[in-house]
Amino acid sequence: MLSAVLREAVTNVLRHSTARHCVIGTAAEGDRVRLTVRNDGARTAEARRGSSGLGNLTTRLAALDGRLTTGVEDGWFRLDATAPLVPAATPLVQAMAR
Image (tube, rainbow, N blue to C red; front, side, top):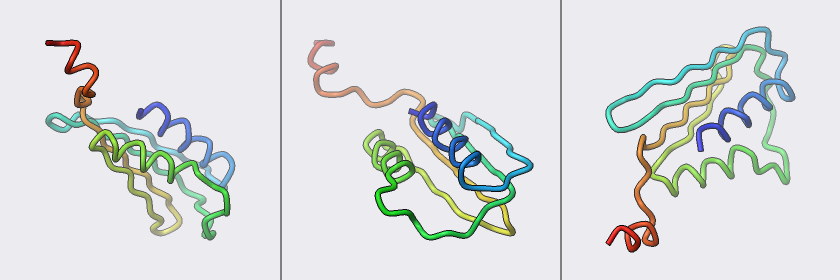
């Protein structure tokens, strides 16, 4: 899931900013993993109609007990995504384990 978040974040850096610097990091935090993407050159803009990139990823992460947050401060855009290191088993996987 975080690979999809990273792909969308980098696409947004390339398409929607005038970035000269981008910092990408990951960290394990207990039973969770965090992905951070920060870039300068953030443009202030309203959400585009029909845009589903970050909104879709927010929904998909929430289904895994994850979270996606974004914001802009001092011209830097930040994206933070967290997800469980081991996603909860779906009912089908649980049934197969019996």
